[in-house]
Amino acid sequence: METINVENELREVVSRITCQVNLATKQGRLDVNLSLEDALIPVLKEVFSLARLVNLNAKQKNFPGIDLGDEHDRVAFQVTSTSGLDKVKKTLNVFIEHGFESNFDELFILILSEKQKSYSQEAIDKIVQGKFEFDAKRQIIDLSDILAKTTSLRLPAQKRVLHEFKLILGDIDGYLQYTDVKEPEQKTLTTNLAKITFPDEVFIAEVSIDFEETLKRARQELAFKKRRYNKKTLVRLAMVLNGAMSDGWTFHEGKLFSFVNPEFDNSLRQLIDIDTIEPIQTSELLESEFEEYRNIVKELIKNSFKGELADLSIGFNSLENCFYFLPEREDDEARKIEWIGKKKAIRTVFEKKMNSRSPEKVLYFKHISFTLSFVNIGCDWYCLIVPSWLYTYNCYKKSLGHEKFLSKQKRLDTSGTVRNITRFIAYFLSTELDKKNSAFRVSQLEILECEYPDFDAEDVIEDDSDES
Image (cartoon, rainbow, N blue to C red):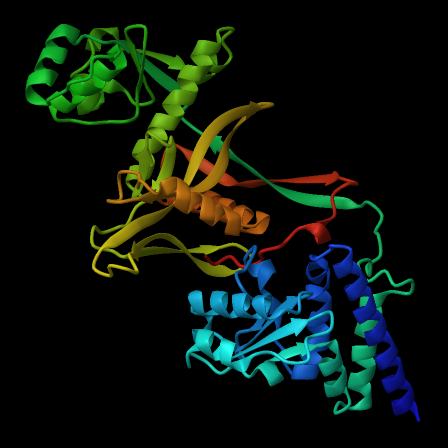
């Protein structure tokens, strides 16, 4: 008797959900399926015995073609409120275009409204072309098909399915609102600020190079052709001509500033009058009433990081004003770095992508990149880490398709993805600079605790994976 009551309730609840979806669809609310994707997971887990079914859109924003998937049992679902053949054909085209048949053996198209009485298997076969099996009668389903499958479940499982359907529907047919509103509480937020330390002393010296002679030699020996240049450019050209390069300096009003004593640095010693070297406390420049001196220190910190990070196979792209991960060896096709976030994981920071149309040609090199800017908060200094991606054609020069590739990648990135990449960069800088006993140190990201009533952690698309 109890079984009959449960089955009757299931029919009633499913009928009401279908009715609500039909009404929403007629009102033009075609995104109703987005509200139900997560809610349907417990139901589909029970009915299809898919213990590892997850929302693929949570793993990757706007996951193409399919919404739910169990990569262990190799079953995927597209959840839609549109029942036409065109929607079915579009789903199959996207599924094949992205090669998902290599990840999933079965694809079900779950229609939340009522499916058509029949679908053209011939039209479907033209798209599938034997790449995987797709039976329109069996694999295009709606909620009535799910209901039919529940009859073969044991009573406890039927009760669980009924409970989940009731949550979807809600007591007042509000199937879009099936969670309770929580009171504001203390939140722990991870910032993209990392505390930094740097040398306490800056060395200042008068630059003694002959600028006119340097320009003349640069034009003859280095084929320097630019008409617009400044003295800082000429100082760098003098370094190149002397055959000793360094990034850890800056130039201002005829003077060279560096955290290292130029008397003992071959690349700098050739540029300055040794007798004019004067050490000064870094704090004196930072606390100066003149903003230009604080900017000198900020630039000096950034330039010094270029040299420190170059030893870690991290380059600097001046056009994008960003640091980026390079391969450790010239012929490497990828670079993976082990790190510890929530657990030990591997992050891919560089990879070579071949052209699918011409497999012998490189389409681009993809690098994790980041910008560093420096801010003073209280008595401490912090670097602000902003992650991104850089696409190059030879590991050094930006690809012509950089903007297009970057735009596509950022559409896939979630807030969780960006947060984890930022955490990885801070971890890498912190551990690697410690290992080399650098004079420059970066801490882990700063944690803030605050009451933020308009923020609900449940509303954020989480990416708990520390892997790339």
